[in-house]
Length: 237
Image 1 (cartoon, helix red, strand yellow):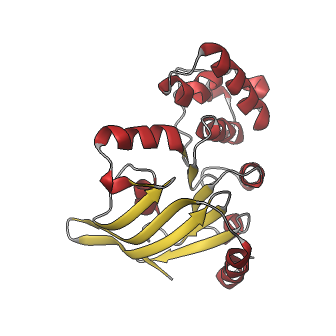
Image 2: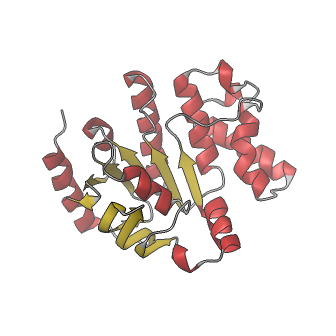
Image 3: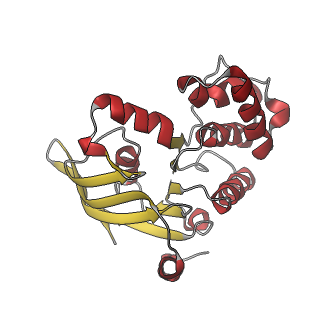
C-alpha cells in the first residue's frame, strides 16, 4: 500500500526537478455555494507535461476544483489560469472556446453517447472544431490505435467492456490535443485489472508530453502520477 507520506515525498522531489510552462495555475481560489465554502484559499501550479493526482476523501472539493479547472464554473475569489488565460476575465464565447479547444475531460462513467459508434464519439471534439473530414478520419484512426481499440471503431458503447469504454473516453479527451486533460476518478467504475490498464495508458500519454490532472481517492492510483496534491475540507494539506 502506498502511503500519502510517500506520495508527498515524491511530489517534493519531482517539483524540485520539473521545469516548464504552466498548463494550469490555481491562485488563492475559494468557491462558495449558498454560504458553504467548498474550496478555501487553494493555490498550486501544474507544468506542461506533468501528470498530477488530486487526492482526498469524498466531499473534500476535488470535483469542485475540476469544474473550475475545466471552465465549467468560475471561482468566487482568486484566479485560475488555463494555458495562460485567466478564466474569470474571459467573455462567455471565449470561455466556451477555451473549454472546447484547450481542455479534455475523462469521466468516471465514460459519458459516451449510446447512439454513436466509438469512432463517432471520439470524433466529437474535432466535429465541434469543424475539422476537415479527411483530417478528422485520420486523427480518429490514430487516436483509437494509440489507446488500443482500433478494432472497435464501428462498435457502439453498449458493446464495449468497461475498460474499452474508458479507453474510448481517453481517446476522445486527447484527440484535439488539449493543453490540459482532466480525469475525474477515471478508474472508479472499473475492476482492478481494467483500472490499472487505463492508468498505464494515462501514464504513457503523460510521458509523451500531455498534461493530466487526475482526481482520485486512491493512493494506489495516485502512485502512477508524478506527484500528488491532497485536499481536505476544501484546503490543501
